[in-house]
Image (cartoon, rainbow, N blue to C red; front, side):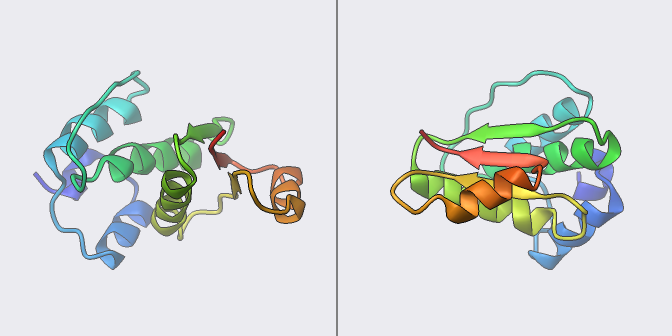
Amino acid sequence: MNFDELGLMSDLLKAIDDRGYTEPTPIQNQAIPAIIQGRDLVGSAQTGTGKTAAFALPTLHRLARHGACRALVLAPTRELAIQSEENFRAYGRYLDLRLALLYGGVRYGKQNQDLKAGPDIVVATP
């Protein structure tokens, strides 16, 4: 199976191609169609298997198609929050969506600005 067969919109397929991905991983094959359909999902896979893309791509797809939908992504660490936000930004580069990244230990000026702008996706860590 390839990414074209998973039902993702063309702007996401273009971003996937930009990143050099050719085939979805097993977790992506299982998760992407389920999330596009709006089903709840719990997934588990080893490090480096594309878990972030497995939930980021269909989430971006749903946000772009159904404008009223919004997403909150919670990460256990600052590093994972930053990684997740970077991936959402890269995959969504051709979509008109706003993101906010929230974590402690830094000044809150930019974070407050991003929240006031009405983000479509908030990636945060406690």
